[in-house]
Length: 236
Figure 1 (cartoon, one colour):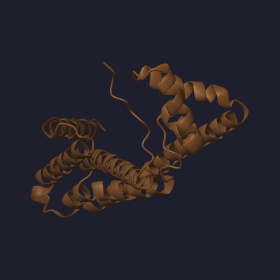
Figure 2 (cartoon, rainbow, N blue to C red):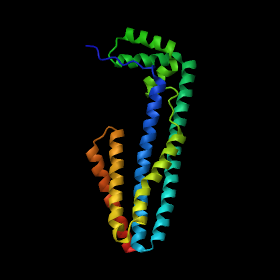
Figure 3 (cartoon, rainbow, N blue to C red):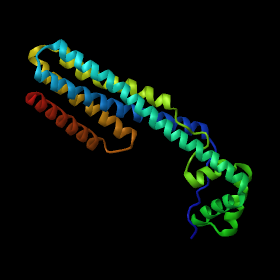
Figure 4 (cartoon, rainbow, N blue to C red):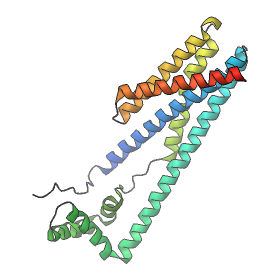
């Protein structure tokens, strides 16, 4: 019995690329938000234990928030730029192969469809037809599972991380800086738990993961982070 045949789908390429880029930007945003929460909380807890001065605590938290946001943005920009550069070079290499060694490229596509359960003759016909119509797009999808011209924007990813990391740290910072002194610690702990639970929920939804596990995992990380930095503040 023949296996189900998977042909490259070149229809709606632009819409798929747009959706993929949006999802990548959202994921970068969720990760940036989580980092913003945890790094700011780490500084807030360490400094708040060491000094009761609310202004000093606020300045330390704000400085860390800004540093974290720009660090996340620059890291995301560098990462996505590297990925894009690699994909661009791959495209150039395949263009050269199609020009200089078309037979080997045809053989690769043919072998792919044979591995999918197609007979050698039919696979050859499919490969010849696809390479006659969409040679570069076909080779990229068969060999690398890449969509032609489907490049994520480094600036979009960087901006998403910058904004999300900033927003992620705002709630804990506001809770510790603005809440009454008597409720400063419980308000901040509650703010952290709410923030990390939200990022856990969003990451699970975007990644089709288990929501409950993602939330519990993020809560545990947040609680451990608070304990560690509170302990460091006492020791220092």
